[in-house]
Picture 1 (cartoon, rainbow, N blue to C red):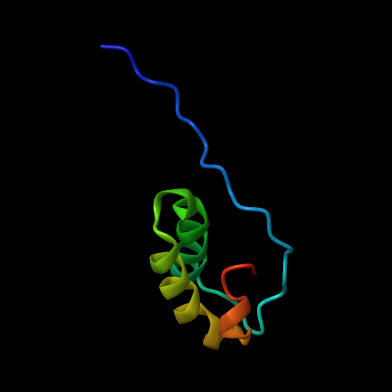
Picture 2: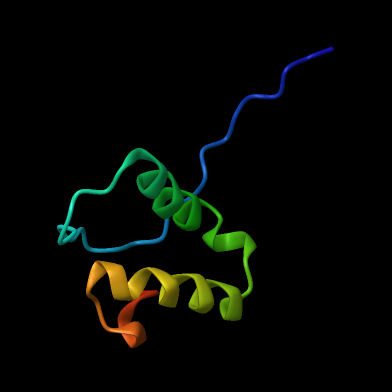
Length: 67
């Protein structure tokens, strides 16, 4: 048995923004999880998940994926 080396996910390019409120650990993990799985998800699913995050983060739904 040989362990495979871990590969870090490729994160999409994005400008950092300051959230309008502090994110708890689960919320931070959810945001990072979405970014890490970005390359594995369909564009429709990415849009759906980003739209869910748009309102609490106070960003326009149309710009949610980019941000």
